[in-house]
Image (cartoon, rainbow over the protein chains, first blue to last red):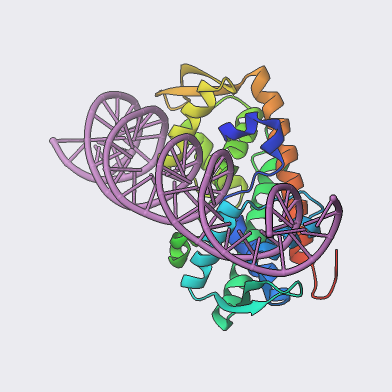
Length: 121
Length: 121
DNA sequence: GTTCACACCTTGACATCCTAGGCATAGCGC
DNA sequence: GCGCTATGCCTAGGATGTCAAGGTGTGAAC
């Protein structure tokens, strides 16, 4: 959290564990290659979320190794070779697990943030 | 994220970066000592959030070093000595910064999670 | 007098993320 | 043909934060 002191990178900050969820979700929409995944996340989140390549590719390999993702080399519209990822069956289940966990975490933290002094529930 | 595979510890999972926010918030309610902070968070979040001591104390020292937190040795109701933390002026500002960042992150991720196939932004 | 809950702390391992590089190719202007 | 930019893949090294697992000491209760 020291990085926070740099105002430039502040917005780009990601929380550990969030990246996997985001990737799984975007890949679930349609088969897509790595480079485009980062662009898509950034676009959908209205520039709020930025995925660096140094985080992206290790994450993709991690998810592939775990069997959540399947990869295939194909050709993009622009005629380049790219590794297209799609969600495996296990990956689809995992997406639901992680989505649920994320929602529960948000609720839990919201409870704490809404707490007021003296209130002992 | 390998830890996720253990279903027991799943609920206790915290996302990196969240801990500071939670601590700042709880300390803002009233001066409180470390051991009680963890209990308080667990209680307010209805057992959803569990802070281990191995995460808690390093975090407290971190926050104190940064000047967000101030510490004083006092005596608890049960007659024991304990280190009571309170929020410094800078810490109070930081709490607002982190709260804002958290809310923005939640919104951004919600956008991605709500995205549907075919929908281009 | 020993067991429990309270209250503090540290160490070592591990996963994740970021910075900062590198490589290769397609398309464009000149 | 030549260089530039955008596209597309990748890795290495370091910093950070968390966890599991340990340890210390004291008050109260039985």
